[in-house]
Image (cartoon, rainbow, N blue to C red; front, top):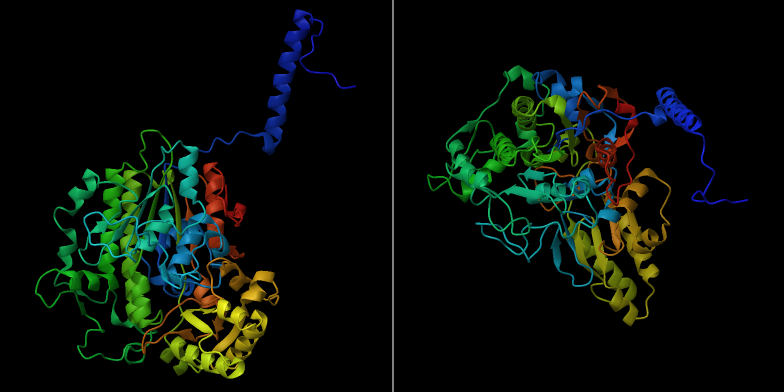
Length: 567
C-alpha cells in the first residue's frame, strides 16, 4: 500500500535517531569511495578554453612535415596532447563556413544550416553569403550588403553559447580570424567576433556585437601595426634541402607576368604606401597569421580572458586564415605551403608560450583542428598519373539545359548553379504537368555520363532518404538542408573539382584529402596525451568540451564525448 512520506510517524528515541543518521553518513562515504559513479569530481575547471583552427590544413601535412616542427608549436600539441590522426570533417561539402560551423556546434549542415560559403535562396533565387546580415554594419569600416556581419544563418547554439547560458553570461567568448566567417561561426550567437578587414588592415567587428569598440581595441590599432610589414619579404625559413620533396614551382605555379608568385614574396603596393592593395596581399602570407595572434593577445589582456573576475571559464577562438589562401594558390604539395606551415608552427609556439605565462597551460584546455583539407593541384596529380581536371560548372549547366530542352521541350529548367548544387524550376515543371522525379532522373542520368562526375543525388532521393548505403552518400546527406539546399547535388570524381580558373586548387569534396584534418586536445588536468588511431570527428569537439565544462551540449550536437582521451 502506498504511504505518503509526509505522513506523521511516531517519534523515534533520540539515541536511535542519532545512530541511524551516523550509519547513513558512513555508508554513503564508504559506498562512494568504492564506486566511481558516486565519486565527486574535484578536477578544477579550466580558466580558458583555447580553440585554434588552421584554415585549409590537411592532416597529411602535419604528418609529412612533423620532424621539421620546432619544440613549442605543433610538436608540443602532438607530444603533450591527445592527437587523432583519423579525424574528419564528416560532411560532404568541405568548405570554410561549413567546417567552422561544425567545430563548436557539434552539428552537421542539415541541422546547423550553413550549407556552403555561398548558396542560392530557393525562394528568391538571390545569392546568400553564409554570414551576411544587412541589418548590421562594420564599426568604422565600409560595409557591403554581402559582407559577413552576424550569425543569423546559424540555426543552432555553440559550446560558447551554452557556457554563457550556464554562467549567467559571465563567461566571455571572443573569436578572432582573418575571415569574417571564421570568426562569426565560432563566436556563435552570444560571443564577440573580430575579423580582418582587407581594405584597412584592421580587425573589425559589427553592430551585431557592440555599439562601439572597447578601449583596448582602439589602443591596439593606434599605431597601425598592420603597416609594419610594408616592403618586407617572405623568404624560405629552412635550408633549401628541407624542401627537396616538394613539387616543382613550374608545375604548381607557372611563372606569371610579374614573376610575383615565387619566393621571395614582396608585400607592397603600386601607390608606394600601405593601402588596400597591400592589406589584401598580406592575406596570402604568414604576416596575417602573425597579426591574428598579436590581436588575440590584445583581446586576452583587454578582456582579461582566463582571469575572469567571476571565476568562470572563458573561451578564445583563433582561426588562422592564410594557410588556406596559400594552398589555394599553390597546393599543399608546394614549398610555399610547406614553408608557410613551418612559419605558422613558430608563431603558434610563441602564442602558446604567451598563454602559458599569462594564464598557465595547466589552466588552459587547448583544441587544435581545421575546417577542411586540400587536394593537390591538378597538374601535380596528372604528373603522378592521376586522372585530375577542373570542372567548368557553367559549361555543365549549358549542356544540361540543352539536354532537358530536347527531352521535355522547355527552356532553362535548370535555373541556378551553386557548386555543387543545381536548382530546378519546379514551378515551371508544375505548369507543364511534368513530374519532378522524371526531370530529376533525366538530369541525373545525363550528368552521370559527364566527364568528371562521379555521382549525383536528387531532391527526391535526399528528401526520402533513398540514397545508396555508402560512406559518400552519408556525407552528402548530412550536407543537404531540406529548406535551403539545391535540387541536384553533384559529386565530382576524386582529384577533380569545380572551377572556372586555370591554376591552383580547391576543396569541397567528400574525399579523404578534404575531410581528414588534425584534431588535437591538450590540457594536463583533463586530457591524456597520446596518438589515438580510432575514428573521430570534428563534431566530437563540442560534446567533449561540454562534458568537461559540465554544461549542456549544443542543441544540434550529434558528436560523441571522446572519453578515451579523458583523465
